[in-house]
Image (cartoon, rainbow, N blue to C red; front, side, top):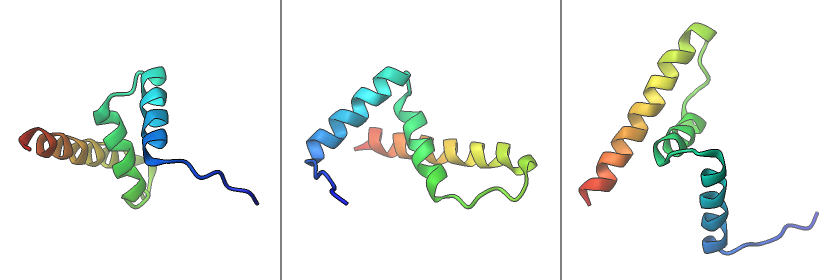
Length: 68
């Protein structure tokens, strides 16, 4: 299987472009990245709690980013 290797700047340009097309905020992106690391909710009832957790993590990342 052939894999195309891209440079970091190309990757982040693609991500930026994708975010603009989808009107996704940096907060949404961070929450999505946090979701990838959070265990699956045990039930559908747990999904809102998981979403709140992911956005809380995203908010913490944005606050830390602003502090620097």
